[in-house]
Image (tube, rainbow, N blue to C red; front, side, top):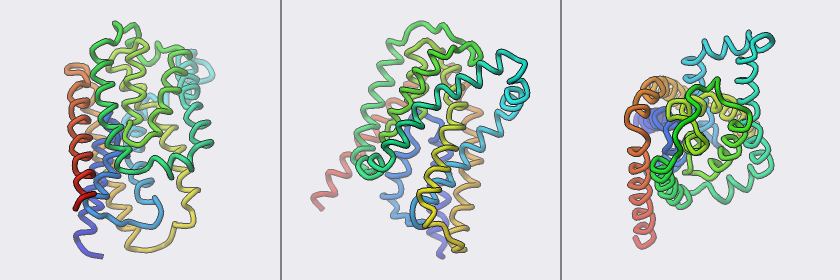
Length: 272
């Protein structure tokens, strides 16, 4: 294994950690970057699955106190019980749609053209929501009710289109339905835990034939996993304060710019 391949794995791990919890589509970035740098990791999608797991475990670690209080208090604390129920309710729509249409989504939508268009459309949607979202009425995740959780969960299904962004779908829908920026982002973090863990387990099962004891593949996966974990920790810690002060507009313009550049490059490549 050459040093260039190791550097590519490191770059993708950092990219996963940077983008997973921002409303800019980690899947879209990984697809575009793999195509740009010509990365060929282990067979199947094992590399992508594991580095995504590294990012989600970073959030689990950062919010370990809240998770623990919810688990131990679920029987006697109505706030913990309501919070846990909201996460389950928001999680269910993605499970149903994912199981029913997983194969079609992977085969039809997982390409750079779809990602590029989705980045632009999502960026425009964020700008509109930032401009016209109602005055926030929900300012803590513990104050959310099951109806709001269900609406967010249904909107999360939009993220199955690569380039849309799970974070964008959940955060922006929460904003539309009355949550403030910090609450929307926090709920998106918590909802990511079962959603992404479930997706990782499901994808691992689907790609189980690709799993092997190849030492080179294991090294690439380990590098990507560790860097995704570390980078995601740094991003999540900073995001709440950033969006509370500056909003999501910068991410919208970034999406539009990236999608436009990607479309231009894809169009140009057809004539080269």
